[in-house]
Every structure is written in C-alpha cells, then in structure tokens.
Image (cartoon, rainbow, N blue to C red):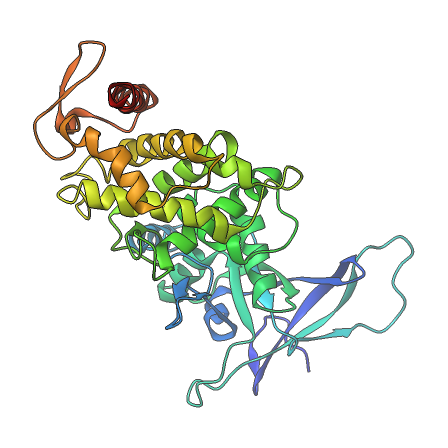
Length: 381
C-alpha cells in the first residue's frame, strides 16, 4: 500500500506525487518526503578527477560551516525550508498513475512515485543524485529532528552528462565558485546561456594547459579538482580570452563559433610559457605572494606580450620556444617579479609586490612590458 508520509515499505519508498511532462522527453515529479530519508535514496556526486585525469562528479565539497548554520536553524523553534530539493533519478524509479482520467486542462497527473532503497550492506548505488540542495540535505541528515517534510522536484536523467548539464543550469546564477562551473563546461554539450557558452572553449583550453603532459602549466592551475595549483584559474582564463578576442589566437578562430583547433592554439601558448619559464626561472613555480609573475597581473600582462611577439611572426610562421626566449631575454633586467622595484616608463616606482590584480595595475604592467619590448626591437636594428 502507498504510504502517505513516505515511510519505507520493504526496499522501496512510496510517496504521493505529481507527474509533469515539460516536453515529450522530460518527465518530472513533485513530491513531499521526510528530509531525513533523502540520504537513503540520493547521493552527492562531488567533482573530482580519476586516474586518467578525466572529470567525474559535479558538486563542490560540502561547506561544513554552512551546513552547521542550516542545522542550527532547523533545530530552532519554527524553521521553514520552502525551496525544493532537486534530484536527478536513474530509470529505476517508477511512477504509478492514480486511477481515473486526468481532468481537462490539468498539466499534472496524480499518482505514487516508487523509489528503490539500496542496501547499504551490499554497497548498492543510490537511485538519485542531488543536483541542488546538498547542504540542506546534509544538515537535515544530522539534525536533532523527529521529522522534517520537504518538497522535492525529481527528474529522470539520461546519463551523467545530463546530470552535469542540469547542475550547471540550476546553479549558474547562484553564488557558487566560478571555477567549478568553468571546470564543468568542457564536458557539457547542452544549450547553455550565451555567457557560459562563450566560456566553454577557453575553459577547455585551460583544462588542457593544466593536464597536458607537455604543458608548462601542468598541475599548476588552481581549480576545484586541482587545489594545490599556484596560479588562479581565472587568471589563465582571462589570458586566453584576451588572446581569443584580440590577440594571436584570434587568427586561429572560426569566426562563426569563436572556437578553433585547440592543438594549433595551444602549441603557441605552450611555446611562449616554456620560454617564460626559461627566461625567468627564479619567478616560475612560486606562489603569487612570492612571485608577481604567477600573480593574476603577471599572467594577464605576459599574455598580452605573447600576442604582440607572436603577431610579429605571424606571416612567417609561429615562433617556437627559442624564438620567444630571444624576444624575452632583453626584458629580464627590467622585470621585478620577486624582488626589487619596478621602474615604470611614466616615472612611477613600485616595490615588486605592490603590483595588484586590478585593471589599473595590469595596464601599467602591460605598458611597461610592451614599451621595453619595442625599445629592445628598435635598438637591435
């Protein structure tokens, strides 16, 4: 018999539910359930890399302080959680329609949702994955409550990619770490908002730079799945976006899509940054606090210098590492990445670590690097 309060019956949970078909391929369920049972039927798929460095999962690690705050609130005198938990179910869940015709004009059908409860002892997979609400579910699971009914919206996901797509679309406008969204974009192929669609290709280039064995940035870019990286993902992303819109990578783009052959583009980027490592070895591989080269201002300004150098070679072929090193060498005496002072062309003098990742300081550093580069070219003739 169906259970009106959603209690377990054998190896299933049966709950009264509404079935809604938003499109001919999208079946959704809306139902209420004791929030303490959600951990039995739905798991959190946390983002991580497998041994082959492929992306798995899609959610950020639990924020313990936030969970504690929610739990404290739930244990208060009169709590309310009006927002629905969103769960992506596999095809093992079944909807049993109630007898009788659907009323004319009704957009939902009544019935019972039958959710299998896996055996914890047998380590069986759970039928659901939490797309939105992992913090609330964790808080309810540990709260001192007899029961706490919550609303749930569930849908049947086609596969793991479908889950990731829905996670991005649900969370893109929320205050989630941008790095998590960007890291998921390369493996997401659904129709996305234009702002995210524009980020997908540079995010894929960033992923390649962080995980290609022949990349100077291998393992050095800080992302949710690579937290030990010294360089902020947003700094690399900004450098790539600048080059794609106004720099050397622009010439390799498809004007219709804004994308292009990643191997051709990355070849130029890798050769340049290997040269940077060769010319400024003492500043490479440090933290941003110890080296302004690894800082956002350094990464973005050097990226613009890369575009200027490569543009000079474009008609004869892309420069290789040795070519870039030859062009960068004259700048080694006018850069203060880790000590000393910057002597800028406008007469301003700054300690090495007073350069900040602001648009004003980036412009100051770009003008300095481009000016010194052009002066070196002029004196070489």
